[in-house]
Image (cartoon, rainbow, N blue to C red; front, top):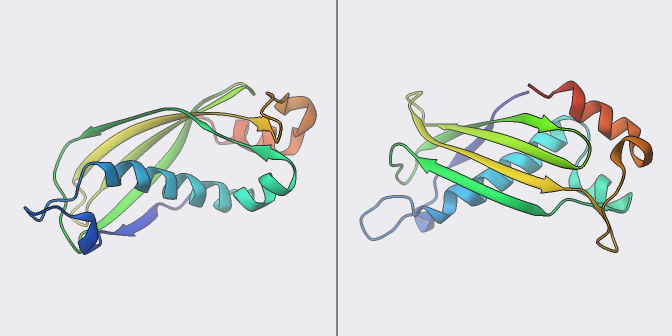
Length: 135
């Protein structure tokens, strides 16, 4: 998988010129959507199949500040997937290769009525792809 690349926008910074902490969570979401697309399972495809994936938990540890025009490379990896919950890890690095943040998120898989789905049974191809990239 290729990293997701984000360029820090001016509006993402605060009065001190530092990226506001809430933006890192948004970048994780952007990287997750890109990760799914790279696997051939974009959210538009999943939603057209009647599948949604709400966030259950998100965590972000800040290691180094970023500023306007920094280039942030975000690697996403599957740390755990057994069919009910998907656990992802994110490593964010600046253009110098320094880790600026690490994070995690957990997601469920539900049908459009909000009921949990049996991924292995109902979506076997997607289930196998997620299993194949699990670390």
